[in-house]
Length: 144
Image 1 (cartoon, one colour):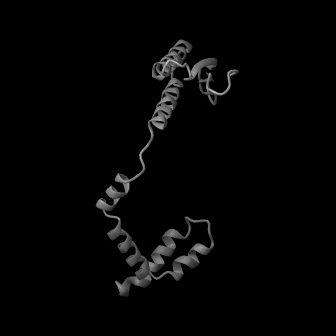
Image 2 (tube, rainbow, N blue to C red):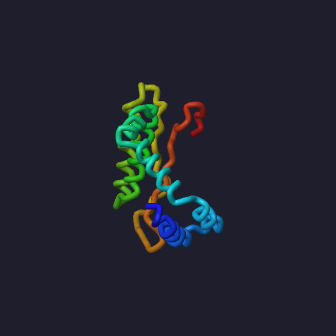
Image 3 (cartoon, rainbow, N blue to C red):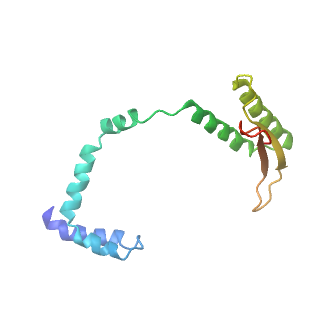
């Protein structure tokens, strides 16, 4: 390894130097000995084993159900942008509002969706799109 260190150092400088815009990178690579880089990578590889990765993912904080419901709603809205007709978009918004109203406890505090604009005809540089607004989105403001 030591007899090839200078050759490896030169190959690292040639391979990585042009890809980064920072001019100080060549100085950084030439200042770092190849052996140090090799031992650092070996050390990090020994620490981050599959069991380490499992432990890191197992003890992550839990995701709340409200966040999951919000992400699911955003997913439904993103799928609606691929609808072929205005009626499909309206039906999807009604299903989304109906699902939200079923989850509420009869207080009507879940938002309903109102379609303001919909263009399902795609043209070059102008994709199809729709604009929908949540009605009763805020339980603190009756004017929405």
